[in-house]
Length: 278
Image (cartoon, rainbow, N blue to C red; front, top):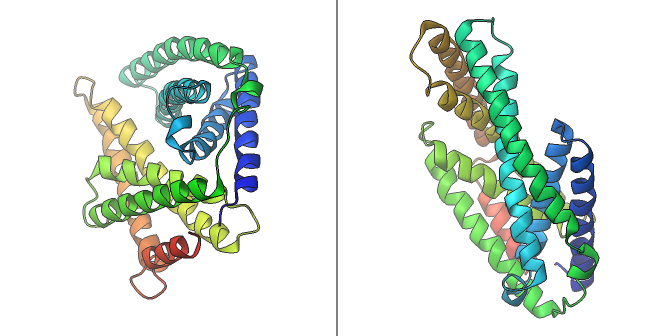
């Protein structure tokens, strides 16, 4: 069960983490700091969404969250550029490959300038005063937490049943990955002493990692398809498609091995877990 004291401690910690990671980002916007700021915002989002509605709209905390989400979005785009760039560098140099990489570099620089502007705005908000007036009861906290928990599980189950039968459901795969990540961070609010939550977090992280790799192939393939058809580009696309196929098969094997339909299946376990922690 999520207690009010434990939640408020996590909320303060997550807000402070975003603040610290933003400062690091401003100093050096490298891949590590991009990863760290995205992760810290995700954790803060999990805390923020657990708050009652009065704190999620029309207040300083909601303004901070909105700006943090803008920061997250543009850094997700920069992260995707870095992923595609890293993949293309593994292929032999050709004129087409070099053009594709140069365009990525230019696009990254443009987005990075916008991201730094948002980072400075986020830093200028006084994070120490944002939580001064947060006053909620344990009952409304647990009610809200349980509601989000159930919504995420339903979304995960719906998309999961779609993607295990059709590898081309790209958006559903993407949504499944995002919802697994949201549920993972929501469960982390329960603390490390909750063994059931820790076990579920590990499963969600495994799913998230595999689906993340599939997503990386999808964004690379989609990017390359925007170029004029050529033998060099098509060879890269074909290779990425083959790697994606292998990763999707890994996803299916994981599902069959760890999420099989039985009394211990993933969905039965996670639903039971929800009921026990209401």
